[in-house]
Image 1 (cartoon, rainbow, N blue to C red):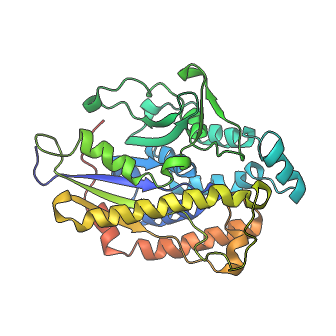
Image 2 (tube, rainbow, N blue to C red):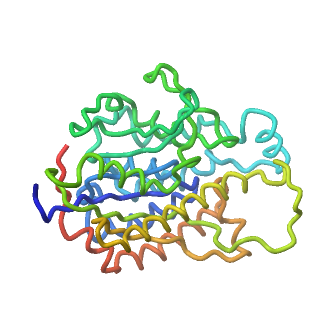
Length: 330
């Protein structure tokens, strides 16, 4: 074992159309350092973060991923009359069809399979069929895995993006028609998924790596809170989008807190850096929704991503991830 070797993980949060915020940050890093794939041993992503993770692992430039959000976002999340969307989400097939999303993914990934990736990946989803979390992985030799490499990237991306009440369940023929929903229901911030995988198979005594280093990138979140005095009795019709979004935001925040505390314990051998969400005012909250893809919202999210990208690429702690290329070879 190389005592000085560090296993580097890139972790990307979920967040619907707000993935554009993350892809713009990554654009700035790629402009400075080159392809992200060259620097990380593992890339983890949930929901929209998975689209980015798979794209990066296929060596698709971040600028092309950003373009996918800008071009296809309005079709994936079409703006309709308020009550049409509410009734469809509450009573019918879910708020949106997944066909525009599939079309966008096919345009970006083609017929690429997990075996075509250039990095280890961990992609959280949830198998409704098995009633348990499911993690799509590159079939690495350390775990003697032989399950996911023949799966199409498009199917994997749909499986971790099928947000309940937003999109239909994802059903994959390759897995005997198992059905999946959004990994954000349990791991919207997939950092712990990647760290656990690293500590289980790659890091430790008699292994290739001696420590773990994680760069975790937040989605753009509504962090301004709600005003006091909301109606206390709230059924689904009152909660709607907030029901899912508050759950995934809470999970992301707790994972960030847990990782920060673990890093304070010197014996863990874990280094963790979080690229945060930009601050959002109460007046701006309507532009920062999982499924708000209006031109105004897209420009706002893109602008916030560029702002944070300028800061991030100059951060010495972030720069340390790009001092050396990745070590693990598939």
